[in-house]
Image 1 (tube, each protein chain N blue to C red):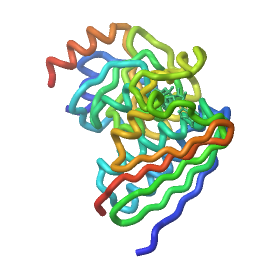
Image 2: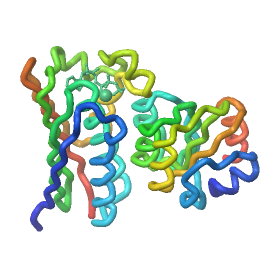
Image 3: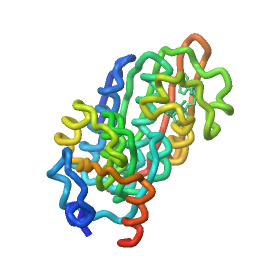
Image 4: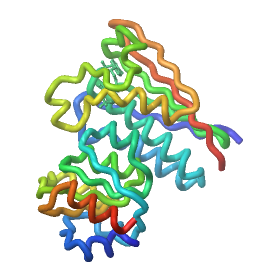
Length: 109
Length: 141
Ligand SMILES: Nc1ncnc2c1ncn2[C@@H]1O[C@H](COP(=O)(O)OP(=O)(O)OP(=O)(O)O)[C@@H](O)[C@H]1O
Ligand SMILES: [Mg+2]
């Protein structure tokens, strides 16, 4: 299933990185500490976080994350948005919690 | 085949630009046709080193040598040095100040991640002089 299909099904709002939305995802990781994510997330994971800064975009790109979902309406910084657009890392936002979003993604995997 | 040599300078206070060097290496390795896992491992390990240079050492310089069978990365700074290397290598050990935590760093996972994602890692450090981190990632082309 592609990131774009997931977003449509769950009503996630796209904030940046549209060029990357056709990529397939294979798993999910939840966390806000960046080195923890780099150590534990797998390539192809959807990453649920409240960390919307430019470093999060760099991490997502280097770790081959499929997309970032900012949960509980966490903010995306302007420079982070610009970098996500440049790198083609899809960033979505939802008002739901990481827990609820992860549960729903889990049912698809 | 001769090695491809790359050189980067990392500035000491610029979190926004940290990751440009590792991102560039990732692009180059991709276009050279290295395997995905090796590229990811090298990119993450190098980024952890870049961030450590910015947070803990006021910046530094990076030399990357790309061989057909391995990627060698040398990251050198003139920061404060690491007093207790064994402790610094432990998961969860961090001296990062609170404002660094707000950015998502300071979990004490960077050096352990470098170890995890590299095939060889070595640190030379001297208090008041600086730190050099050497890493090798084996690769297939
Ligand atoms: N280049 C360096 N110069 C001086 N001290 C360093 C350097 N790199 C690491 N350290 C010391 O080693 C500790 C552990 O580093 P490590 O990268 O594992 O964690 P961190 O940078 O504190 O947090 P994280 O990497 O999870 O964001 C640091 O908190 C710091 O005290
Ligand atoms: Mg670190």
